[in-house]
Every structure is written in structure tokens, then in C-alpha cells.
Length: 185
Ligand SMILES: [Cu+2]
Image 1 (cartoon, rainbow, N blue to C red):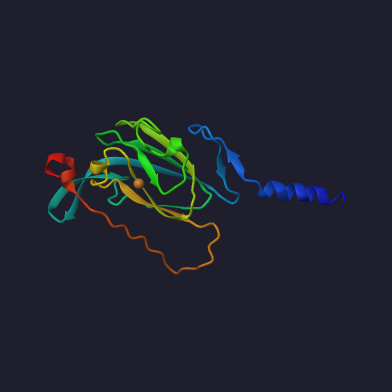
Image 2: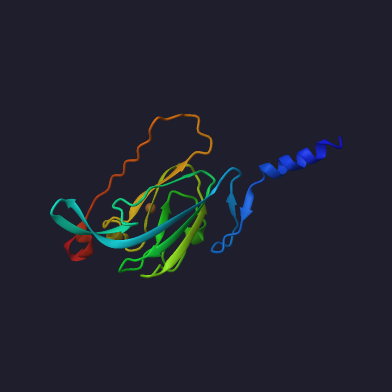
């Protein structure tokens, strides 16, 4: 009997979720047992991009990539994204389809002040639920999305039965360089 108690206590400890206090969110974030802390850096900026060779156009992009970088994490990971805004405009990031705390939802003037040019913001949330999600700008979306500010966010299931040889992510999008000039839309 004496030997069983420490084992039981240890099992309870292992199965309990780990609580991490987020500086930006008032509620504690729950990093699921087995989850990792995953850190990313995203910087957005305006750049010149040639969809058609010889016809340069302006794109707004994350990390100088048109389509932005795919973030791939596992369900229950704590995702921390250090974001810097180098656009000539304010912006925010919304994590589409992810159960984030309100303060991380990227809705300007409701869940956070817009991130001004030259400003930074740290987004932090636990990746859930699993699935193929995406992230995108959430400020004047009619302009910022159409200029390219979106990318995949893949949340792998923690316990996946199916094995794959390869996985492909396909993103469909409508492109509009005219978005810089709303009068021409
Ligand atoms: Cu969305």
C-alpha cells in the first residue's frame, strides 16, 4: 500500500494539463500534456511581385512570401507568434477556425488595438481544434486580403491513426492588385 501512493500521485500529475499564464490574456492558456511551445515570427510588408513575368505588381505579404508561410503545429501546442507590422497601414491577424482567447482574436478595436506601422504584437494561443485552418489580416480586409495577407495554419491531430506518404496544402485565392486603389474595384 505504501508503494502505491507515490505512483498514483505521479500519474495524476502526468495527466493534468499544464497551465501557463499568458501576459496578454487574462485566462490561463492550457498547454495540453504532450504539447510543445511553438514560436514563430511573422513580419508583413509591401513588395513587388510578378504573377506574370514582366508585369510587376504590388503585393502585401507575410515574411516576404506570396502566399505567406504555412504554420504547421499539433493540437494542444502552445503557439506564440511574434508579429511585426511593416506595412504602410495598421493591421491585425485573425486565426481562422481556431478557438483562441478573445484577446488573441485579432479583431481591431474590439479584441485589440490595431498594430500600427512599425508596431509589434505577440499572439499566443493553444492550437485547437485540429484541422486545416488559416490566418489572415483582419483590418480593411477588402484591401489587405486581396493584396495577399493570408496563409495556411495546419493543426495536426495529436493522435492520428492514418499514415500518409505525402501531404499537400492547396490554397485557392482571388488576387486583386486593384485593391490598392479601391475606386477601381
Ligand atoms: Cu477568417
